[in-house]
Length: 77
Image 1 (cartoon, rainbow, N blue to C red):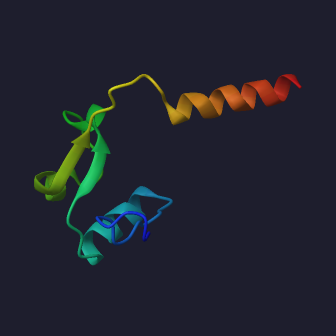
Image 2: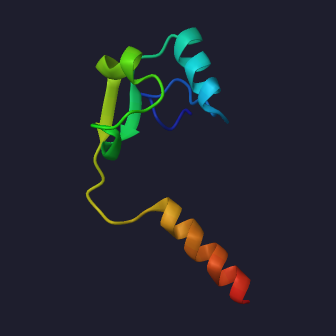
C-alpha cells in the first residue's frame, strides 16, 4: 500500500452480501466502478451513488478477456 499515497485500504470480498456489509460497516471515501455501471443497477447503488467514481478505460484491454485467452491457450497445450 505504501506505493499509493491515496489508498489507505483495499477490501476484497466474495459475495454481494459482503459488499453491502462493507459499505455499511467501513468508513470509506470513494467507490470506484467501471463506467459501464454508470446507468445500470449495482449492489448498494441507492446508498452510495453520491460517493461513486465511474472509471473510464481509454483502451480495449480487458483483464477478463485476457484470463479467457490464457485458459484457452493452456487447454490447447
